[in-house]
Length: 238
Image (cartoon, rainbow, N blue to C red):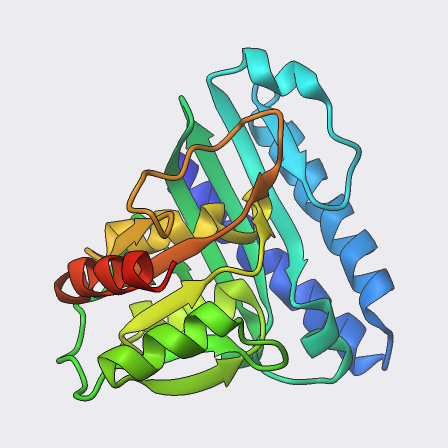
């Protein structure tokens, strides 16, 4: 089994578990805990020599000496999960030498798992562009950029759901400046890059994974034709 196949299988299995937990009317805490246990068990069995960084486990900094590190978010969008919305996800990614090399993002409520080894062709872009922002706390920067480029703002929940909406052709731009962690975007970035999208920090620099500090303050995932425009607009807004 390839790394990408493994990531897809595990993300899909964890998503099925979360759906069962959701049907039991259980909250996000149980979902986080049980999905994390499943993912860690599967990864340790299949790739025992690799390191793991998970949102739901204590960080072992021995990972910094490893070239291959699995970066996972067992339940991205705990709030959306608890509210029984569709916009939550499971992230399973592999970073190699600091780059998002492999990724799978499961959207269990939509019955789909997107992975870096099976990108779908991008549908035609929409005009004006649609920009995904936080449904509850869109940053001033995102609002400003959307206004300047004439983008329609669409509020959505988890980072994975927003990133995959761009991959699926439901939006053109996902801009985030409110702070994230490595597990929030490693899998989405891997899938987005495989689909031919642009993915970077909002200053245009590459996102580097498996750093000691897990925080990644900002993110841009968008159609390639919008990257320069959005990055330039962000710079002018700063």
